[in-house]
Image 1 (cartoon, rainbow, N blue to C red):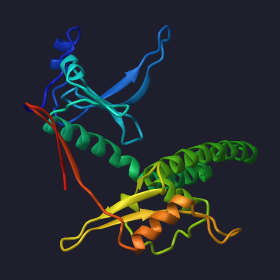
Image 2: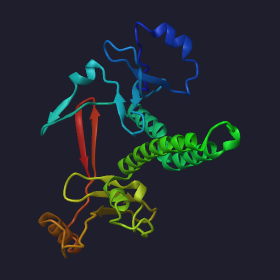
Image 3: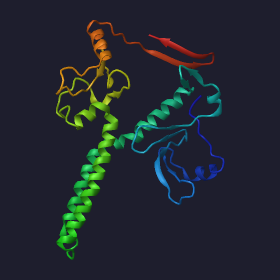
Length: 255
């Protein structure tokens, strides 16, 4: 099927003329009704099928009416069929757009350092007084604190609950974790998160739970204790489900 290129009837001519570099996305802005301000929300791929949300690895996918008509409803959830190549294209685009934000903490520290050095250099503005510098530095501190808070939120969102525990001191930042922290995915049932550690000879699925047991001996829930018992007794099984849309309808293969 290949990757579609969405057309905007009222702007197609202008886009064809202005959007010449296929390798670079377009910036997307929102203009609220009645407002003259344009708010940047993210980037759009050249295919126009996916829009990233600034500062996250989430986004919007383009869906046509025939995809809605072929949607499948089961157990309170709706599955909309996507061409695999187009889906992978969207996934890769969102990941690439999010990459610069992964190093946001280090970039923020570097930028803050440059700002402080610049503000402290009296030689650039010999006419300013000490009081002027103090007031300017106080304003800078507030700005840097706000930027730091934003960067910490981004970092916590990427690494999930385990990173939250490290940030609050529950887990030491220098702790040698037995799993790759950057691959941890947040869970909403039983445990905090999990990650799949791949190796050529054997892969490991890590289930992760972070608790503060300083005031109690056991912070696990009843369900967690039952699952831990199943793991010890080798009664926890891993299944892989492949759900594909075929010309004959949905096909589910379980391994």
